[in-house]
View: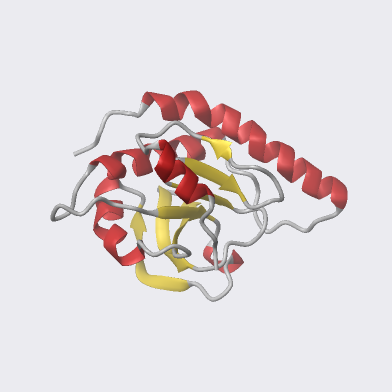
Length: 166
């Protein structure tokens, strides 16, 4: 079953895209070597949409808590790769959530021809990668997080904004 699109994801995606693009331009200006390109609005929208709908689901009365890191597997230090990548679908995120609930464990997400997929887990998120954690999308450049609409409470958002990677 496919959920209807989350309207806030479509609204906020271009703003988040501009936020990330600004930081990537700054990194290029400063001579920082980057491993990935900034995510486009469609990618941001798809990730927010999937994580939002996953947050509304339950798995055996368990409330999913996940952190998604947008980066290719080869950009991660010591990734744990799944034998088979999983499509970025709500039902897959809900099933994986209990295994990655601990702070500092992030599901790695990247794109290929069919679309976005979850390739495994990562503990350290390199600079200039993107993380979606609860109600926040975090650009791993020195900056402040970009606020994203979510059903998470403000206390969840505050707790997630302080989440350490690694």
